[in-house]
Length: 382
Ligand code: CAA
Image 1 (tube, helix red, strand yellow):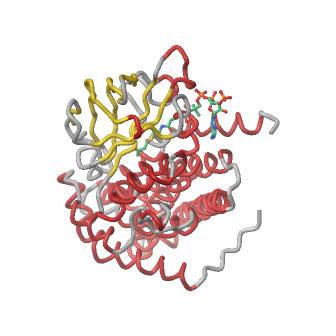
Image 2: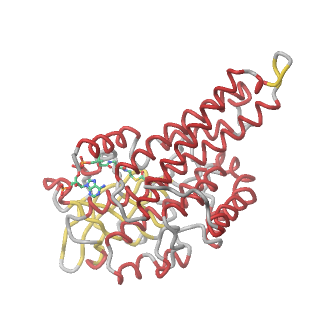
């Protein structure tokens, strides 16, 4: 795959618009939302108005109609401003992707269009208290009764869950069937029987809304089933292939911000009579930081371009997500180190970036799950 990195005028303007948005609407309020852990409703609303949400959804259903590559240009800029906010934004695409992948045109019109056009929120509901990395081992049940399905169970770590008007839920018709029993169904968030739990008090990305959900005898019309019964797991995996580059680029944005702060600070801070940037110890840290960021971005671009070409990209998506997440953790930790004691305080922006980066190694498949996917892909002989 050849990647041409000369951006077109349209792509440059996507970067410009999102960079300006991050500068004027996100960076000035990021630490306030981090501190309060409050959901940035107004920022999300403005992002929607500017066309920075539902990026990879089809335009005929109200989406921005971008490819994964173009979307990644936007998400890097937003994430360099605040990863909690970009996670909230990208989570909408994540929730709508199973519909884009597996739904009929009528279902897309019904379940994507109103969300995208009205600027509503949606959530992807796969993880459970007892099923994180082992997504195929989930236990929320789905049972057919007449022309309805009945859902029972609990979901965990649901991004946007407290504010979403629609949930994309994965549930099993029979746990004994393992992944072959899993179904994907769209659920109205106001359905009787759904309880939204308390927002999690997280280490980082504190303003992204994260709640547990409980489903007790929740009735869902049969026409809300996406694909056939038992096709849910494949739909979830295909969704993650598409969304992992969008997550990898969040890591790139965080790392880039940390690098830029650390580079600028190292040119100002004086010790032993000169700026710390003049010491090789600091220079080598900065050199490794920028190299890791560039490599993460290129891996992400490769997986994005492959997806935009319609190619199978589980290997490339997982390599990008794994490498970018681990790089962001290293780069942000080094940025705190360059700032020294100041970096450890909330007076400076780098400790937030370090806390925000940690989640990248956990959500959308841990760094260990990515290695598992990578190993399976290279050993499967495909
Ligand atoms: N595309 C299509 N099909 C796929 C696939 C892919 N990428 N990956 C697997 N499959 C298919 C397999 O071919 C297999 O099908 P058959 O039975 O027909 O052969 C089936 O799915 C089962 O595959 P595996 O045997 O590989 O399944 P597994 O149980 O071993 O699980 C796993 C694999 C990679 C560990 C998977 O469970 C996984 O990705 N776990 C992590 C879950 C995750 O990422 N959760 C994130 C939640 S979302 C989130 O965090 C978002 C947020 O809110 C911010």
